[in-house]
Every structure is written in structure tokens, then in C-alpha cells.
Length: 395
Ligand SMILES: [Zn+2]
Image 1 (cartoon, rainbow, N blue to C red):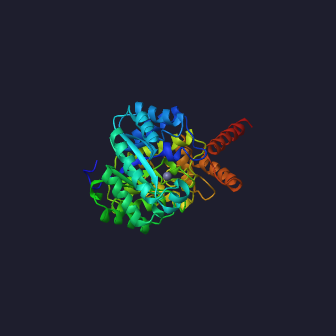
Image 2: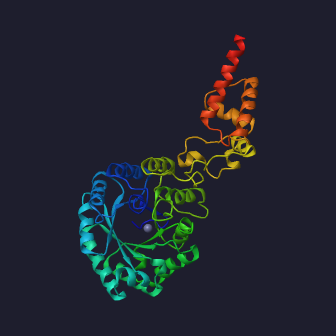
Image 3: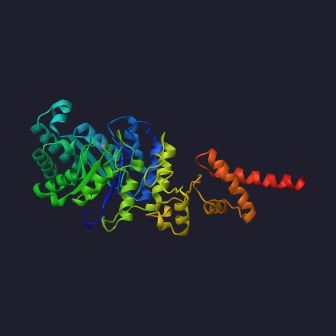
């Protein structure tokens, strides 16, 4: 999968890193529904779960591997024989399979979490990659906590993994600690120093603890990474993962700075976000980029007037380009008469000038009391107006 140098591969981990975070658990049917939508969206690799973690996870990985056609299906796995064998069994029905091995590599993790030496870590990585290579089509290796790992040791362990047959090297910023310049330098270092680095695909996996996940992801891509690990709505451990929709939209909007191709169908971004929001216990915040309820909402009257005249005045992309069906203009007290007329027209009402005057008058009164005016408020205003007219004729 390395023919096109500008192609960025999207590795979606909504069903694994996303699913393991609070409020995000999904049952098998929900995972299958989302996996089918991720396929429509065009992701290249679906990490369906962590097969050894529980019976439910095993069954979910197996169900996705059985029913989803198109993307490569992956399972997370520790560098342990039982993990690798379980992942292999769960993935077996899929056409193209990948085991995603991870092994803590920072001294902090080696000493306090795994209680093994660096030498033992190198041995485990070597054995696990070789074993996994016998079980699935391709092996991805992640030195966990890579961004806090000694650079020389990081080069060593990545070299061992490549030598043992890993085809994808993921450099996870497990704790969301790195910053763009530093993360990019790590990829450059690995590509320059590690023998065989030119034969593998490097991958970014960023967490948003400092709000830098997407920026760090692009820094990695600019330094040569060609796989991005991400989730829908940015869900994931703690502050979440890099948001798939933000990466895809930035590539779409700024080809001058990010001249990369991908398989993502951007008009499926919003529908996918909505589906995830329906399944888990929360939706993205209203001001979330690309998919938040207010992402394309213009309230200030002067903005609304501009957008109606030409969307480019205040929009860097059209709502339709990311799958939002219509411009969701929220009306408020700063909205002008034109925006009201436009919205009423969208709702199917054609008012005379006098009627519009009257509705606008009521609208401004309501807007003084109520911050945001929604569709149902407008419908109520129209009904009141109709009632007033009817009453008037009876008098
Ligand atoms: Zn993660």
C-alpha cells in the first residue's frame, strides 16, 4: 500500500480507542452499523476492537471482520502470544487483516507498568512481530508512549520491529504531550536513522490533551507519515483522539498547504458524526469544528446577509461539502429581516410585505426574551400571525 507518495491512509479507531472512553460503549449491532458507515465514508483501515480484552470485544471484531467488506480490519494486541492468537482468530473472516501490536517503550512505562528491561522489551517486540506476521496479512507496531521515549531507544525498537517484518510503524502520542515541531522531528529522525524505514508506512496517533491532536497529526504527515489514526467526533481516551472530520476537511479546504489525496468521501462526514452521536451518550459540542450544531450557523445579521449573497463571504467550505444538508442559520436578535424571510421561505412560507413586517415585529419581540430562535419558534410565530388574521376578520 505504498505506491502513491501523496496518499494519506485513514485508520479509524472509533470502535477501539473511541469506544473504550466513558459514555462511548457500543454493542455489536451498533458497532456493525457504524463500521458500515465508516466503509461508506471511505476509511482505509477499521480498528474494530481489542480482541483479547473481553468476549464482547472478541465477538465485535469477529462480526466486523465477517460482515464488513472493503477496508482492512484491525485488532489491537499486546506483544503476547495469547493476544496475537485471539486477534488472529477474530480477524480470520476478513479479506485483509492487520494486527496492531503495542509495547510500552518509555522508561517510565517499562519500569512501572511492565517491569521489564529495555533488552527484554526489544526481545518481546521481535518475537511478537514475527508471530503476528504468521497470523495476519500485515503487522503494525506501536511503541506506546513514544513521545516520552528516549530517542535512541525509540530508533532501536522501531528498527527491531521493521527487521521482524512490521509494515506500519505507528508513533503514538499516548498521553497527548507532544507539540507539532517536536512530533515532526521524531518522524524525521526515525526516517533518517532507522534501517529499512523507507520500506514502511509511518503513522500518527495523537491525543488531544493539549488541544493539539490534529495539528500534531499534520506535523507528522508533513514529516513523512502517511497513515493517520483518528476517530469520528474526536472521541477517545481522556480528551479524545484527533478528529477524523477535521483532518479530512483541512485536506479538502487547504490543498495548497496539504497536497494529499485520500479515500474519504467528505459528504459522508456529517452523516457519520450524526450516527455516532445517536449511538453513544453524547454529541459533539455545538462549537465543534465541521460537525458541531453551530459549525455553519451565522447569527450576526451582517454575516447572514453576506452568506445569503455569497457563501464565501464567511464560509471557508460549504455545508454541503461535508454533508450538512442546509445552511443551519440560527436566528437571534441580531438577525435581519432578510434572514428571517429566507428561513421562512425554506420552511415553505411566502409572505406578503405586510405579513413579513408583522412577523418580523413579533420576531424581534421574541428575540428580546429568547436567545436563539429555532424552527418551532418560527412556526409558532406564523401560526399566531395566521390566528390574528382570522380573528381580525371575524370581528
Ligand atoms: Zn490512543
